[in-house]
Length: 232
Length: 389
Image 1 (cartoon, rainbow over the protein chains, first blue to last red):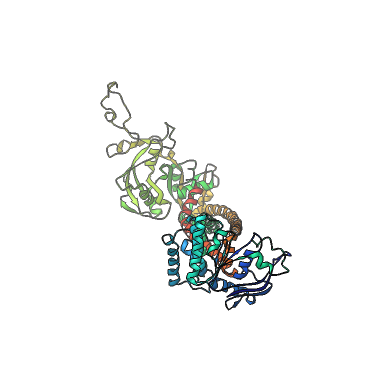
Image 2: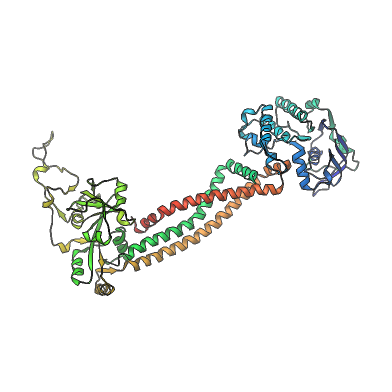
């Protein structure tokens, strides 16, 4: 179970703050979050991933209480329990395809990069149709292929929560559907909760639930405007 | 740290040009002062050894450095000539033994050194292949000449005219290679030794006569009966014509470019030096002193270059840091991604540190290679630069 309870986040060096009264997401649940640009959807994802720490309230993911964790503990939690997919893929262009999938294992000592992990990376790449390009530089991949690599990177650690921030924003219509199906499939395969921020209402049909972010955030009665930089 | 190095390597590999420039700049900046120091030390050692084994030289008054380098290395601009009369003067003084040198001509870049058999004894030169000089027109060559020109005893070398446009000047002489000297790691390895008489023939001071019938040939179409044409583009001493070669004028008037003077003791040397103090046209020099003066000049240049190298190193290090800082700015998105995925700042610092270490390591290897190569070719390059050959 993922739950946020009376969370308040103050944007640094501004007078803006974001308040979320209550939000619960069940294990295995696939939730889409919609809302206008700048309302704080990305901030919510960053709070869920532990990148941002609220000034008050509680954020629980399973047994973990993120708000009581140190920075190092949240980093450790993030890399072991949360898979993230970004709008711009955010692959490391200096690495090859399979190396990008394995990246989480290279940057945090909490994860051990061994033979089974490498085999799983290959298997994941094959499952998304990229088995032939394991050693290809990601700069030589199409946009759709890159996002598939990003999804593989997000699920390689078998996270309990997958967060995707407008993962289809830069893709054409056909590829959007393919990528979204892939996300659902991979999340179901690992039994993870899936939270996707999207503007695209055509993609909502595959989700268990769709939430309007304005409604979630407005539950906090003292909510001010969200910050201009991190919010989207 | 293994993964940090891997990621660092991948990043450096992705920016090959940038990495190569960084490594190249660092290597040059570090190797330059090292190479200078080693090369100058070796060069000094070689020069000093050669100079110390050549206590006195006599030559025409002029540049002391040119005369010394010429007598020791057969290089530099050939100084003004003196005559064989000086050899007689030294010999008659009874204070020293003269070894005349006449070195004005070349085969490619190798100097033809006319001298006497005493020079070979003086330098302890031994024939490794073939024989020594037998008659005029013969030459024995240093091991470096043999290797470079790929020539064996029995082969031939042709001297080059002093000036290709001077039709009245020296006429090329085709010399018979009689022997190859043992390698000595000295300038003698790059010399072509001939007798003084052979050198004078190249200089046009002696000549032979040919049978006129040798110079005629059957007239070609359009040619008049009995017309003469030059048969060979060079002079050659053969067993048939060797006795026809002769020199006009007195032997004492024939030219030399230097005389190595071997005095039996310090007193004799001092007296001989005193004898030449009153001469304006001819001078006597002590090569160890001249070389020491030359080395002071080299050291001044070395000190300047070392100072410049330190500035270069500082500038390069600053540039490397600047390039690194700029590349960090360019990689902000990548670093932010790593952080968002769960990478600690410490790990990011380790990746960046690994990049610096890799650049430093590759630079060190390249520096070692550049230094080793430069140390091999540096002394010869410096010697050729100083002697103008």
